[in-house]
Image (cartoon, rainbow, N blue to C red; front, side):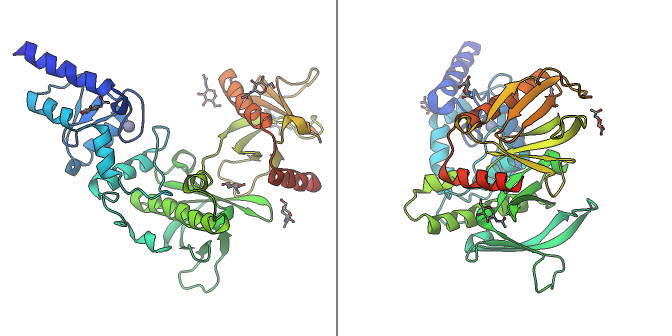
Length: 378
Ligand SMILES: *[C@@H]1O[C@H](CO)[C@@H](O)[C@H](O)[C@H]1NC(C)=O
Ligand SMILES: *[C@@H]1O[C@H](CO)[C@@H](O)[C@H](O)[C@H]1NC(C)=O
Ligand SMILES: *[C@@H]1O[C@H](CO)[C@@H](O)[C@H](O)[C@H]1NC(C)=O
Ligand SMILES: *[C@@H]1O[C@H](CO)[C@@H](O)[C@H](O)[C@H]1NC(C)=O
Ligand SMILES: *[C@@H]1O[C@H](CO)[C@@H](O)[C@H](O)[C@H]1NC(C)=O
Ligand SMILES: *[C@@H]1O[C@H](CO)[C@@H](O)[C@H](O)[C@H]1NC(C)=O
Ligand SMILES: [Zn+2]
């Protein structure tokens, strides 16, 4: 008997290693070694934890540690990741964000709930209320100056292409009206210190403005996130009628390329180094006193090497800074050099690699216009 069991068990592990089953059915992480034995899918440890917390979608087991009986092995053999995808992801809207293993918990959990618990994608059009092109509701918004979170009414209109928020529930005029084509939304649980924290970034008079919000309910915040993506999708489809769905999808809300603390000096390089929070949004490198500041203290445009931009490891010789960190980076722009320091070598190498990738890419005509505006301002 024991021999039988180990053979079928071995065949199960063989199945898990094969192409479609080689990545987690829910987040794409490599080499999943857990399974949902009720859905017949191979998943990673992290997704198995989410499944376990939603008893209504079934039972999870470890491929390595748990006992599998013949019937369960048979069941797994008859299903698998490709089949589950064909059923539960049959009608995922193009704009709907499908998280990876790099994404935060709330995005991954709501994706799993949407697929198997609410079965939103099994049939076309079976979706939450935001799918009628309008979404209205309350979110906790961080006050710009005092950092206190207060309830604000938000209204997203796909037809107008705007996201507005109101200070009072019955206010006639919105406090802020954001055009969806200038808006970026990213889930930022760590920065906001809330598992459902959402950062909204937009351009106001060509300056980047951040708004930080959250909702107690994970579904609600992910609905907002996807509703914004839907409104942007709609806007871009109208603005670029010949673009394919996939081209448009790439231009929806996206994550920052990199964020973190570095120290920097001022333009004369004699003011001493100050610790700042840096956020890189493609060619815009912004720095803040505090990660939750509404406005950046400064923004640096990162052009391409053929326009005179460069990034070097280390600081120029003779810099007598008071920097507490020792891993230097010099960013050269046509106007001036920016001297930065990182806390450790891996951080330094990470930033340099990201900067280099951007500077190696040639600039589009639109980016040249943005560059000209930056020069004009400084
Ligand atoms: C993936 O696993 C399922 C069973 O769980 C199996 O039917 C299918 O053939 C496997 N895929 C490949 C490519 O081996
Ligand atoms: C938002 O993302 C778009 C690309 O989708 C980008 O062009 C724009 O600069 C970003 N805006 C802000 C304010 O970060
Ligand atoms: C460097 O000196 C400036 C004042 O000249 C100060 O504000 C800053 O905090 C100092 N930085 C470090 C890392 O000690
Ligand atoms: C390097 O510094 C970053 C942030 O400053 C930190 O997150 C990371 O853990 C550090 N890495 C090492 C290897 O110390
Ligand atoms: C960018 O180009 C430089 C030299 O032209 C090269 O050394 C570097 O590897 C490139 N980096 C990336 C990320 O493409
Ligand atoms: C914003 O920048 C664009 C170029 O990117 C420029 O045409 C426009 O006049 C600027 N608007 C303001 C309000 O500065
Ligand atoms: Zn996973």
